Length: 239
Image (cartoon, rainbow, N blue to C red; front, side, top):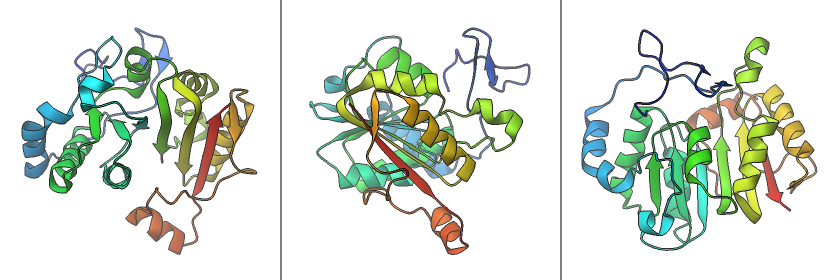
């Protein structure tokens, strides 16, 4: 997490950012950093971690080549991100996550699997999008299982809101896509409503989409499906 992230007296990041008058969609979770994750941060961080900056990201310098760029917001422990990046070596992937154990976990997988087309930023994705991603440069955006903020009074903290989706659209190239997935039905309904109301986007399905083959089933998701829980994917493209 960046040192300029607003915190309270206990050092925890504020849900409401008084410097920008906006509500944050995340809180940092207490999590133990394993020895392997710490080693990955130390050894692989210098190569694969990109510092947040208030300047456009030079992707050619960051990746050492020019290729279509996919942004993933909130990659968790990184298993899905690593799988997709390895599956699609012809594309570059930029993963954004605030939680240190997740960043360490994905760096560890990058090293173990020899993944070269993946870079990470440990920072608030809203600020990364605003400060570092020029308009019309993303081939796609992945947001898988964002925090559902399931209590009604917390729904306003959800990431997928009209203004945020409008910002995502501005960053997409024409024909670029947004792929969302959630296992909370009421959030899926909200996602569908918000994306369908954005005039710059077109739904690729008549409602929810079939899970694209590149997105793997997580252990948690697979367990839920066996118990009869639903998972909803949405794939919209920029007109």
